[in-house]
Length: 418
Ligand code: UD1
Image (tube, rainbow, N blue to C red; front, side, top):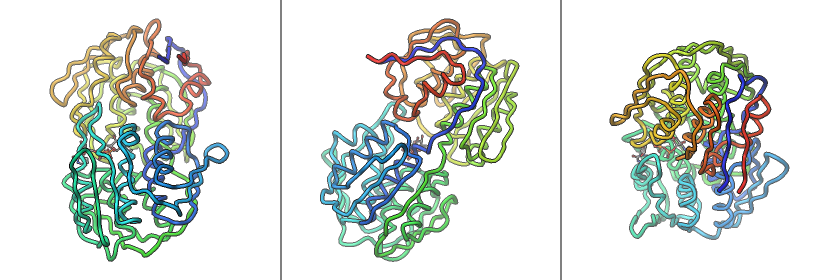
């Protein structure tokens, strides 16, 4: 089994460049199915999740070409298959995002139910509610969602919770519908805005992305487009914590600071110095940090995808911190792993109480999900001795080049391939 070995490292110093956003790329790749013309996507990192989404598109009949580093060309002229089978969908939940585009393009889709995952049951009821409101007939039995429609028609859809995936899937389905669809209580994440910008570049008519009310006027056809995805705000936040936890000094490039204000605010509250400067940030610390309380919320609140990494930081910050996780019901799996390294964490329902320790100790630990894996690397950087992280395929899903990026700024980290 491949593993990552992290040894206690000196304060990290130097420059790290952030990649294009994983959570933007996945829906944008799905949205390329909406057009019969060629789409070109830039700033696409080498990630397992991107590979899986490309496999899904190929299985549907799209011609997907990886050009020189970071560019993908997709031609979806020949979409001739409307079924995305279990073997593909089970690899990555986000591949369920092909349902909206398939329905819009072919009037028919059969996509395996994504099922649960380590961080919670993650239902799809809001996606289906949206498709039904647009006029699709849905049969969700036998492990598959079968969706049919003669035509999709705009309607008003209220989301009981501002689900990111449901907002994206509905936007894509509504882009080729007849008339106007309105999503109320929509997710406001920057990745939604990026998706809407891409579809608008293709000739779509979406306004209000980034607010709670999104209006999508359906168009007859979408043409090809070229698009550069936004920087990954979670990757940026993770490296900001790498600087903070090691008392280092990092310049992090390709960052849109407006997208990570809650992370910046909480780091400053903990005592980290952050200098925002155009498309980069400088993050440094030279003392023991303070405990802070965190509550995860939909954007623009504190992102659940930064919760695990913050827990690692708070494990060695002075005082007692409280983390309240309100997005996913089971997203504290990393707490047990951090405890193996000596952290003092108590879980009560959806809250974690963290008493900061002076130090952690390296231990064999397991990455239970993507962000949990990142949290263990961060903890390993300051733990005495050696931390051996297994189940690292989770980390490879979302952090392209993490080993080299950290090594280049002084981290003692190695990938041991099986
Ligand atoms: C996306 C992100 C993920 C991030 C999450 C929340 C991608 C590829 N993934 O996931 O990294 O952690 O947003 O910011 O962009 N829910 C329902 N019914 C539904 C859909 C969701 O109840 O139909 C619930 C989920 O169970 C969860 C909450 O809504 O408790 C948030 O889920 P959602 O916003 O949909 O997350 P994803 O789009 O899956």
